[in-house]
Length: 538
Ligand code: F6P
Image 1 (spheres, rainbow, N blue to C red):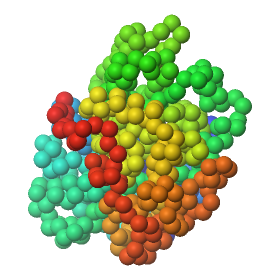
Image 2 (cartoon, protein in one colour):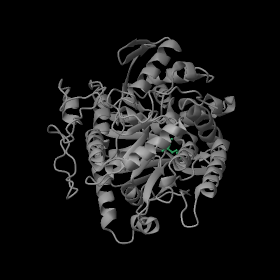
Image 3 (cartoon, rainbow, N blue to C red):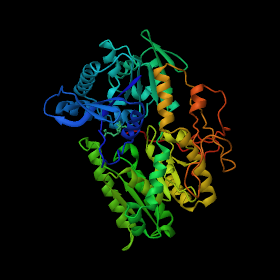
Image 4 (cartoon, rainbow, N blue to C red):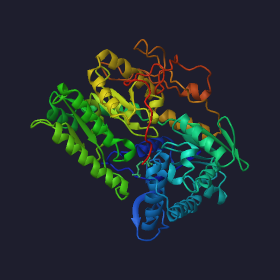
């Protein structure tokens, strides 16, 4: 079997590459290098007119097949329909959703052009794996060209309820094209349920569990929560402590004894950066004793700056950080630093390791790999605390974080305080549980589980509602994934949950505790009950 991956943007790796802030590029490259194959998509370059040329570049076991976008295609397909219509509506932001028929036509046109080019490269036993909202109709276009291979789709961002999505013109026609796939993967069970409900209510499909039948086709729709390469990220973070001239060291020198709270996100309104800055300001106002003792470092590489809402966010984040620094800062202490540039993965790993608090508070997010990277980077003997939005897909798995509602500034401010004051024993207990979860569901687990289900049409068991984690005793309770040794930092064993899930074993490897749902019974909370979401959108 050869693996063919298709994604909107394809970056051919080079030696001095910067980290991809979105995380998708990193995840897919790791998957392809393991399986070998072809990666097709947009080069990131823009030509004046539409380009038909496909450039092929070989890197190890991976062939990259790249095409440029014409300027009109970039405007309509990428900036227009993908990022001004689909992106906001998928993130429940109806008020920001901007629909133009010409953009939708451009979106369909690029999908048709990609299908024409790709069809010529497909071999009979290829398994095709298409990624993300830019390419929803691609399988339908490939089928039209006689491609009968197994084709899967993975949706990296949230999928809203049919009520919300139904507001988008042509949404039923568009989502119906998903039935050309054999397997549709979502980040969470909530997203999978929303899509199935949408295909039933908007398109008249028939659902039976995770199987959807429509127009003579059968599509399986399941949750496949994406992971990271935990072990390699852990190593990067541990190495950053030993190296001499690293950003970690420079941060240590500039911060001295002060504690560090960190946020790392593409500059995107879905990430809740402005709300996070306000929450940090609120924390300093409510706890004046903490002033001069802690700083927030927000790394926010700019993104999609040709979309007006992103340009506005850029301006707004500067304005809020400037105001809070002027109101709360001292001559020798700047409370908030916003750095609008990308850092290498190893620099990020070092920053995470230095930070006592990882602040991951998106207003809505498919998964959020920063939450997982932050945990992977911690020193097991003295770990930091993750504060995590309940609206990130990661919250479905990572209930031992401090789960917050990002719309509630006070709740986030109090979670920062709780995290900074948390006793070491509790920090270790939470870290161990989180580390075991992200190890058991790492990038290899995600890829294998998805490709097993896609290539062989094999049944994979439901993603457990609760991850098999023993948190009550503080130490791992049984075999399976092991934590890094607190002294050496080395992992002691790395048997994955994968064999059990792949083989369809009935028993989870460890005892389930029901601890990992946002708002779930034993999920630690910082507020008073479950606050209501007042405003979604605009
Ligand atoms: O996760 C969603 C996503 O669109 C990814 O596909 C992409 O890698 C990332 O966000 C960055 O987006 P863009 O390619 O628009 O800069």
